[in-house]
Image (tube, rainbow, N blue to C red; front, top):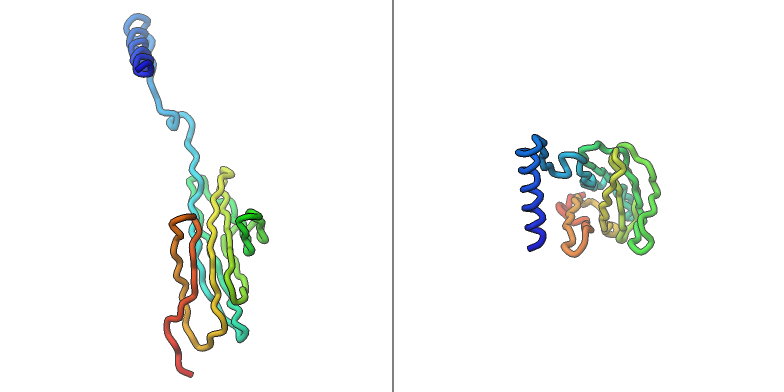
Length: 163
């Protein structure tokens, strides 16, 4: 109740100043005076380039960031561990594109985007590389874990090709 009185009092005082003192005061929102900062958005695309006879996969990672301020650079952690935090193996990547050869197993990859205002955002992907499978075509299917910001990705068999 007291807040409404103060708000009403401020409006009444502005009206009084305008009428009696010829002083005009205009209310403005904070974001009209000081621009509100927004952390950059990030998206990660994963492409399998090739698979060797040992089941290792050459993977292309493409990060795309968006920010009103523009993107400064990306950083990559290809052995991400949430307990140890973000420890980049690639500190400054101006293009958002990396290629890694990964062994069979589950890999945690984190990419951080930093915009020209110094704001950042991180995307974490869990990628499962299946074992030796020859003469197959693959695609990555990613789903967002509703309990975290992590995406779960797995290589699935699409088409078995004849020899």
